[in-house]
Image 1 (cartoon, rainbow, N blue to C red):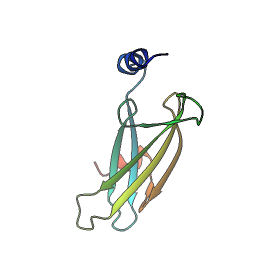
Image 2 (cartoon, one colour):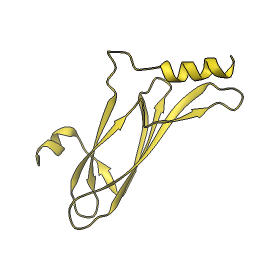
Image 3 (cartoon, rainbow, N blue to C red):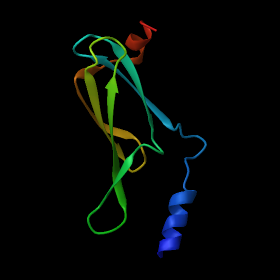
Amino acid sequence: MNILQKLSKILSSSPSPKTDRAYYLYVQCSKCGEKLRARVDVWNELTPEYDGHSDNVTSYYCRKVLVGEKMCYQPIELRLKFDKNHKLVEQTILGGKFIEQAEYAKEA
């Protein structure tokens, strides 16, 4: 595949109409207890990981750092790994914990 074909493929690829572009995560700060929501655009914010021998994407990753609005300002780091179909397969957090959407909604 020549360079123009690769570039055309990259620029023309878009999510299917049935695919939601956003993935939401809900976290709580381990220092002050503030609850936060993070949004990841799975078609624009992910960094591809390639296999070592070709241009084939094997997975994607994303790193986000959240800071709340209360007085503690502790950074909460999210490290996310997605498969080649943009589905979340692994998540880790530093400075907080993951919570359910219902728990986040209690304070909203």
